[in-house]
Length: 443
Image (cartoon, rainbow, N blue to C red; front, side, top):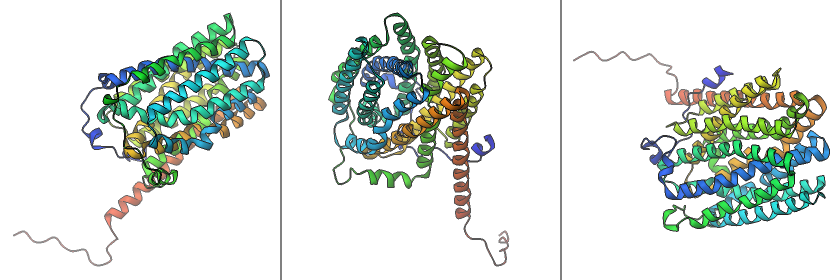
């Protein structure tokens, strides 16, 4: 697989002039922007709550049903709206001020989470309630993500965008160290419902942060008119840029099959290692530790080659397959940290390379497409992984999650390598059929 990954010497998706001339600043260069510091602070609090809720939701449905298939169904319902509305939400993000969209989604998320908190604390929660919550929160998420992904370009200059994307990803993963620990403590001490209650309060942070941003400090892209704000234009745009297209394909395969951690890690904690909610929380903490380190490394990179993204995807799959076969929990934890590291290197580089390659007025739609395949494939992949896990065991389900990214990386590498050969043959021109001319005699 490494040979296939290295067969493509393609540069990453073409980058903007500002990116080419980016002054050195390292992974933390984006922090020089006041708007980005405010935005990141609010998101840090929200992300902590999100990871708390993720642990609580996964464990709640597993505790109610004792079924990995039910966990997969919950994931499918949560990400189904992205599959159905992701592109349209991206088009909306190109027409409406992104800050307005984000303020709306924060308010709706707080209301939905508070409702589930009340039901769970009252002890009347059923599996159907969790399914309904997953669907509603997924609908909000579908409109939140394209706006949030492209909003970063409004709070930092273009020459610090790669650092901002990677630092945001690193912060997201750093909160993975805090959120699961708090969630596990709350679940075993006061109950799952209080985790949802704390998360509902956490949405206050990003709301205040968004309101504190000065309009003069933002760099909004020109709004797209309705005639141009179509999803078909984004699809045509991506089809004309093979490196972007194949990067999105690879991200989609990772999202659909490679990142079903709630399904396989709950099962590995419960079945393979005879653990409980604290074991599952530990798995997420270790995964987050590696992920945060990987995101920082990705942010320090000046350029991204497509073959680096492809190679990272292949290594991630191999590590996950090895973790599925780990004989002891200590070995599993080491491999889990390595998985998190390589996964975030791949994710951060793929995300930033696509964002830097597209025109600003199309960024919302293209990122809607990116998130559609990255997250929208979960309704397909999660039930499959859940069914395999339920019928053949946790290790079999995790092995499947590792095999697919390796195969997808091989396909991507082969496609880009073939394109490179065709481009080289075209540049060389048609083969000569006549006699080869002799060089001119020296004067």
